[in-house]
Image (cartoon, rainbow, N blue to C red; front, side, top):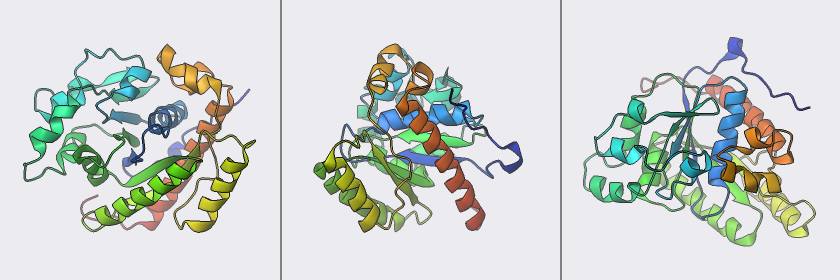
Length: 274
């Protein structure tokens, strides 16, 4: 039996850590990583918010949330508060999304603070340890809002050549955003859907470990049938199949994320904006 790690209340986080789960390429495991990293952190005793920022609403659907529920689009439009949106799942607070998000970008595109709308909304939240943002698979205004609101980005990456090309594009975007948001840091690259029996997967993993200065997480996420099944039951794989390889992988990833964020908090000076 796998025993989850637990939040160390004597060494808690100094402030909320906001992490965007982002990759320009679709189908890279952003939603799966957001849900299962969040569920693993919540299982360990951390206070977690998941923000679905994709108009496809995959995170919302995967956790069994009715698509008729108020969504974060309503908060962007000023028709609801963040508190009114929160739905509890697996010990996490969920801010759901839906097709209405597609209209949000047009509504805020000409606003003076168009890159800071999400940051303003998240300030309405009570104290949490982690806010994980499931970003759209594009460099959209919503993605830029997520990056502007975040301390870190985490990049899930499949072990294929096209994903490698997308990684270069993603990291270049981060460098540009750093010009206006210098605190934004790449927490790391997470190899996902890994099948170590495939030579290509092993070769690409070795390549990114050797050729990128960004941190590559020690824990990789292996592919499994249970991870594909879980959304149809409205659950994370951590809740649906807690002893599966993928669930065990995500718990180990959560431990690594906690360790890195605590270490970075100790190294970073606290600024007036913190």
